[in-house]
Length: 380
Image (cartoon, rainbow, N blue to C red; front, side, top):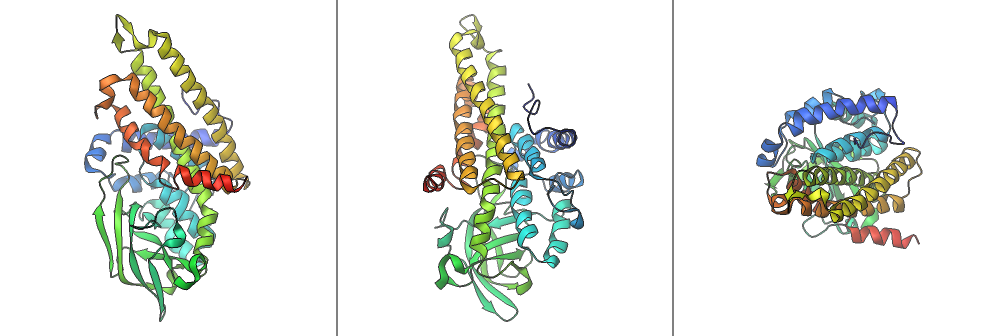
């Protein structure tokens, strides 16, 4: 059954939008899966094709060329990509970078960056993680020293999604290291800025459609007009936007888990063992039944969470709980699903192998499962 049917969040506009997204995903990602996996990066033209179809930044207001839609439409893109096993970085571009500019950017920044993000002409990234700094954003070492008419940026970032394709990067840096979290600011670094260099195109276990890179900043001059919002408010902005980032990961994880389950059902009905299909064994059906039940609960919870976010009521703790639960579910379902394939599940020619590789990192990025437990635990 199509996971999009009979959803509480479905309406005619969402259905039409999903049809468009599904077509682009099939044409650009599914049809070119082997090429993308081999190259460890999605083809650049995907971005402009997706942009022309209205698939990028659907929440950008109409004043800046966007569709002005709510997060349910972002979720549709996440679901369709997650279901086919493609983790190309549209979530970073549309759900995170665009929102920082919408909520905290100047009018000049909105007019300059948002239309090109919508069209896919420009790809956005955000650089938080450093070689020695993961979830502890207060500990970033990248600095942005005040100079005439701007900042002098120095530091290094790693594990940056869209790092290769990015035409600009929101960089988390300390403009006043003595102030700790209150000294963190967000700066826009553009592709052609002198001293901005890309390091290795990182070779990941999975998520091969998502290009990930090291970034280096050596005395990069960033003009004052490329400061996002107010100086020293970067950490506050990050905390306000993290719930949507974590919700995005939850959506993708749920969709990927559903695909792993669907692959397991289909294969178990074909694979023969001891004179009958694997599906004919009661133990198989019982295991699949439990998996189906958890997925059913997952979709109901996901719709509740997305609708709560659209209504402006989703808390940081609720978003963390969603990220924790759905990423853990993805790992559990994918691991169980692969087991039904036997040795074939360990062969890269089968989609389940890719889904298995991709699943592991969702319990790490966007905040580890342990960090999610800490966030939730502090609220109890």
